[in-house]
Length: 312
Image (cartoon, helix red, strand yellow):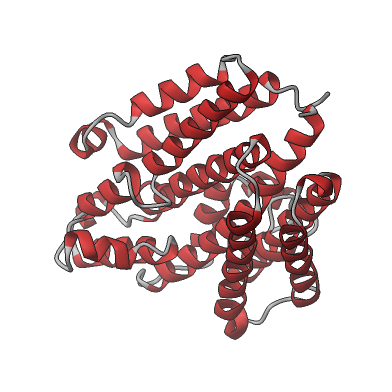
């Protein structure tokens, strides 16, 4: 496969996943803010920082308000990670690799972009925000369904899955970071009712509450929730699940191409980071653990681009 085709597939699915997860991050900020008494618009600084767009927001705005932060993350064309920008970039990449996609996948991607373009052509009223965020998740699921139901399991599929799960792991880690690093009111609140309510919002934001309750019931601790989102092998948005799937698809590429480039060593290192228990992670610091993982995910993405010659 040409490197440019692999690049287009990888980034098409990264941007689709990014759009969905940016919507989830906005929803997380909204829900957690409701549990904080006396919270002002400054709460959204933490959400912007976690999304990695705080600096670019400051460059174009004189002050920070909730409405401006949401609009920046949802529909600003000046923000390359906004939902609208991400869906546009996904469609552009899909056009570039259209011959590698099935008709169903292209139609689902193109339709998602047109839906978002029309819906986000104007500022979204707060009363309409939950419906819009839910729609973004539904549209992303439509593309995934077309992909899983119609795409041949070959190297094309491997590259799009690598993009999906790399971005998903990155965003699950960032959503967790919003909770424990920035939005937790104080150390004294750990284990309190407000802490537990905030953990519930995290589960809702990654569509994990139902699966979590099947495993742990309704009387679970924050450590149980962290265990589920970081280390569970079956939860499709957990860090361990995502990294496991990337291991699988990189392994299939070894079989397809007959070589084992350095990105495979990086994914092995990432997988080894997760061969610990949750107490070890908490003892060393959840924020520190997540930040280390985010750095390694970034290094892995760059190594994949080098190994498979995305610029050629």
